[in-house]
Amino acid sequence: MAAARHRAEISEHPGPAEPEPVPPGRPRWTDPAESRPGQLTWQLITVWLLGGCAPFVLDGVAHGFELGGPAFTTATVAMLVVIAAGLITMLYLLVRATSLVTPLGGTRRRRLLWAALVAAGGGLAWLTGRTVATAHGLDVLHNGRLAVLLGGALAALVAAALTRGWWLRAPATAALVVLAATGVLAFRDTGPSELDQRLARAGWTRDAAWHLDVPGFRPVRSTFGLAEQGDEYVPTDPAAAGRITLLTIDVSTGCHPPRCTDQNYLLLGGTNRASVFTGDTPRAAIIRNHHVLELTGNPDVPPELLRQALASARPATDTELLDTLPAYSPRNPVEAARAWLRRHT
Image 1 (cartoon, rainbow, N blue to C red):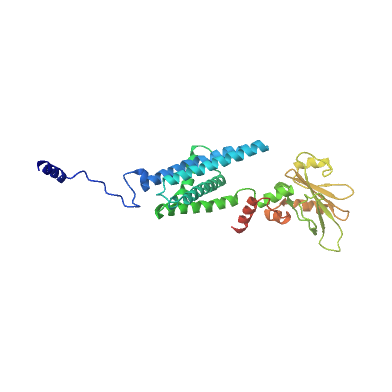
Image 2: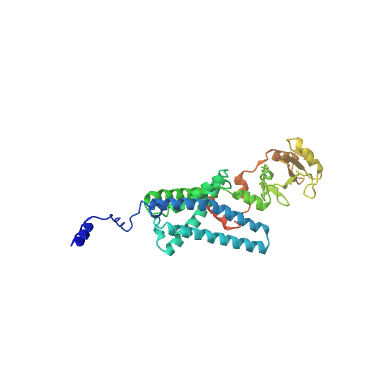
């Protein structure tokens, strides 16, 4: 009886309290690895580091294409594939370890989708940021620790846009939208203009294009005298006689036949007035920006008319150049997209 009473007395004393079970879906704030704030911090910092370093690794490996040859090209492609696969794998493991942060962390397919979205979106955001920086003459996304920090921040914005809750997702999405709009405008304004592309296609330069008016004459062909046979002018009055030819000659490296046949043209640089040359046909010339504008008429054209026309010579405007040059057809999708944006924005 004594033994039984002793056991009863022992059982009456309360033992240590057991921890209350955590309701499903409620974060355990005592363990950072199991709490939503802890996983959010871990995820964003990791994405920040990966997003800052991955572009430079990929860009460095891509220089292998410059070596040329099928062997180097194949090796470069294989290395890029391996690096991209490794990046996707690390992102997949990251979202699996931080599944509380995003609604895409519950299943394998969703985790793979999250990894692909962060990799692709981060890369696109990095390229957009670099385009914006380049358009403003900045090199912050080209090299250095600042490039890693800023590039990683762009990737972190993509991860933040995929998190739970509006308080972080909404501002991150808004920042990405602003970045995208700014990048589109920067992309539109970078690269050669349509006029520069037309000039390059025709083999002309701005300083060689001069517009002049010949009183009583109209041009039959308008190339600012840069065509092989120059431009022809005929009288505006059908009953009048006469024909004038305009030829623009580059004399920056000397007078080279057959286009330039008069060595006296090299002496025109010291005068601002047109010079009339004697011969079988009236001819006048003036030099502008290392280019000689030569007007040649038939015997029915008075020499003073040629001098008067050359005195009116002025640089061609952009509108006149665009009206004269042939239409430009983009050579690749990038140029086509830029041309479309310039026409519609």
